Image (cartoon, rainbow, N blue to C red):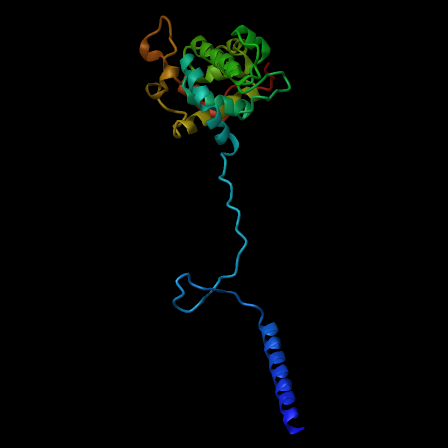
Length: 249
């Protein structure tokens, strides 16, 4: 009887020991170990796996700057064909449509340079929602206006906004239309910014080559101003030119 009780006692003690080990393992949780391939050295604990972070997508150019890059080569090509400074064309496009080829104004102006259908036909372009055709018509008109007004940029811009007839009616001056005066100031300010912050009072000798190249027939070379009369231009920028309340067409 005594001999038979000893194995049973050992069996009971073994069961108790195994239960204690299983409880300790359950309390601590399972841990995984990485065994070196060579078999040497102590095993190292594997770091907890982390969910991979998605890499952010590269930022694409936003706003007018990004769109200006999109149309940069096209504007360069068309501007050079019409002897214009590409930066001047950029300033007009940014002001007119913010580089949106699908833009249509309440008055019916279309595309990047907001060209009226009649103006497009005048310069041989009909598909004004197509960027190249629109730029061809707009730059051709702006180049013509610069020649028409002896290279005076403020008058060419006023004519682009209100029509050359309005500029002529007011004695070759910026018409007293609030919209037109604001437009001229905006385009020239943007043009100055694109050129590196040149002030509106730059002398004619520092004017862009494309503007200064507008020919002045029958007048001395030194009278050919790239930005027009400085006194008038100053009044334009300070809001003091020809106060009036007429609406331009």
